[in-house]
Length: 246
Image (cartoon, rainbow, N blue to C red; front, side):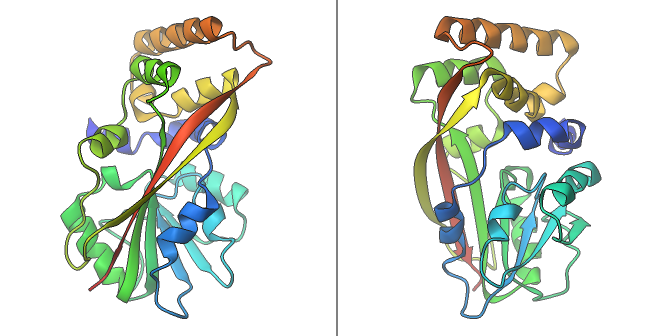
């Protein structure tokens, strides 16, 4: 089931692109601060529709490639971020030569990766001193209505992992450093529904469960006074982690 959930997103690539938030530029810049001087070769692994790729591509002289196991997600990425080379692959099986990269980054993805096998494969692909960067946008459940929304949709594998202590990496990478950024995303009722539709739990749920989630979300939005033309601020915490190859 976990593997089915991990590879389910292509079925809702359009909702993923519209419903999921962008990454704060400063958080992505922090991920890459430890790269050696002159570094520019970066792979976005588990790139999806390119939410992280488009921020990476803003770095001066960056040479970015996008890697994902789902061709449908990569097709959406190519339309959103033209010119970035795309390849089918995973963190455990990267289609790149030994020491061919300066950094590998994963957005909303490391929780699907075997941390020992993934660390070893990323370690093969990056040069000595290269960086592994991990980043997640997480809704801020300290806000009551957001906590209720999460309860309706079910917590994701990423949210559970981060609540239980965070990601793990293994050799040849050193200890993880962590930073966090708090921000809000103005969002409509329709985009909230599309965000929910892009979640692996919802994609793989039964029709009855999907109907239950939509009904309870609508009841919550009605209670909040969020009509079809309205906008509400959805608070996020972006959590970022980085480690350097020994």
